[in-house]
Image 1 (tube, rainbow, N blue to C red):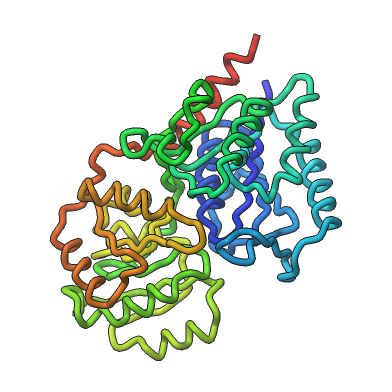
Image 2 (tube, rainbow, N blue to C red):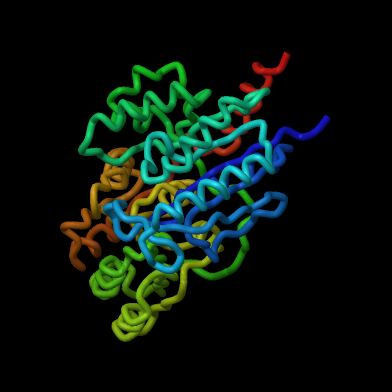
Length: 384
């Protein structure tokens, strides 16, 4: 009997967190016997690894111009055109026809990624005509960003009910229920299933790098310079002043700005590009200072690392601050607001974090394997 096939669609627009989260799901699928295809529409990420046994397909890439997500740019940093959209749609449909999966997972859509509906809605309509029809699920993180147009929630519900068999929420309702950021969740309650949080579980390259160090990171997007500058100024004020600090800079950061950091850095500071073994470094670092993206926070909790987070607050983004504050209430990390970030406040938070005892406090971190279990369950129910 042929292995069931799953195709996962992801479009990261600013950072690479969405790509890495679904990559963890893809690894779990492949590890559990699924023929797995991961289709990415974002810019290529050189830190992505561990995809052995997974078919990876790169669509003509696009990214957001800025944190408003209103303008899409192609790989040449030119706003996309209607011709480009038609080309992307044709390419995505051709990939789906070739893969012919039993299951399709779309990351975030229909709860987000509205700019990509030009290709996703036609694909979903195409799938509805297939016999047998593939199962279709949404893969969505625990917290959605605030939206200024409530009618968009109605669109999300309509698209989910029309095209999807369900939505997998990669979170824990004991931490934050989906309705906290999607007020109309009760209308689709029968389609929502929680998986727990997702953490990288593949074989992470092991290294001694980071042992006993303070790690400063900001994910894969070009949003980390204010944090990095403040961290350098906070080092001599902090309880970790005598430890080695390592600043992991996104490859998307401006090269002139990175050189500025090198000039600001004093003795005991390493500045280098973000590394694929970052989750492994968290396991033996002294402290992590980072933004509060989903992946970084969950990897930090899983590693039981002491942490200070500075949630990203650009554009309409609120999800990092909400998740960070809820976890801080449980004593799992320290939070410094981006708008109030100063060297002294960061140094004070470092002291508080170093005085804490790391724990996961019973938070579910098996979301990737639970997603596999749910997919198998739905496939079994569909089978005669």
